[in-house]
Image: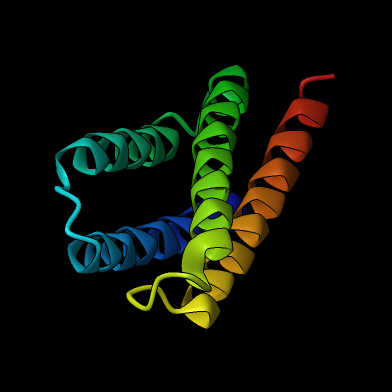
Amino acid sequence: EGEARELAKIAEEIEADQETLLAIMDRLDVPPSRFKRAGAWIGEKLARSKLRASSPWGRVLQFESLIMGVTGKIKLWRCLYEVAGSDARLQKQEIKTLLDRAEDQRRRLEKLHEDTAHSLS
């Protein structure tokens, strides 16, 4: 199914983003405990969306949760991008790549959400 493949690709990208964020946090001497909780929450939402693929209403709500999580990530990347010019530990191009990918993830999740919501009518 196309939806399952798309979710799997998004999940892989989010995992890669999490690893990159951990590396950035390490460079900035930020403890990862709070991030790990947020990352676990997003991972749980992705896993549940794979498990409940039979319920369109459940998928609509899960897509909304994932969209909110990715939107939060976009805000983080935007903030880091803004300060990257003044902190040598941050690479502006790396952050821009992460920001672009997150915006693409949100667009793809919004499309999945829209398609699923339309299937309910």
